[in-house]
Length: 173
Image (cartoon, rainbow, N blue to C red; front, top):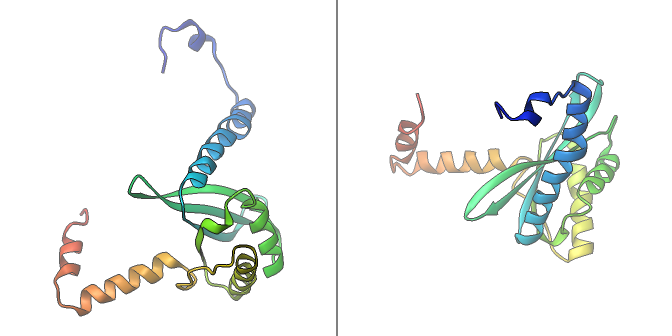
């Protein structure tokens, strides 16, 4: 990358040092930049998914954030936690710990996969938001992306506008 530069020629980085640099240097820096952007923007959506991580054989909670910045919608990774077995109250506790430094009054919607424990989680979270911020969350189903996409697709198809054909024709082959 920096051919001919004396420092770059003597630089070496093993797996452990590289992991340390990423976890303790780069990750906190980029997390800080993302959180400062969130504090400047007015609204955001949190997305989460829980799945079993095969390596530690433990349930992993991944949280992403979606926000509008400079007239563009961005979805960014926020954090992950290993949570083990998680009932709705456990899930809420981990979710709150992961998002404690975000402004609650800017949260518009929480998008998640659809198991029943997540609906119970959603009800508990919405009660917390109403008590803290005197506002509710936008509830458009378990996964906002799929619900909105399905509604748009059905609307385009049913109106005979030809919009669905136009959109399909611009997809890469």
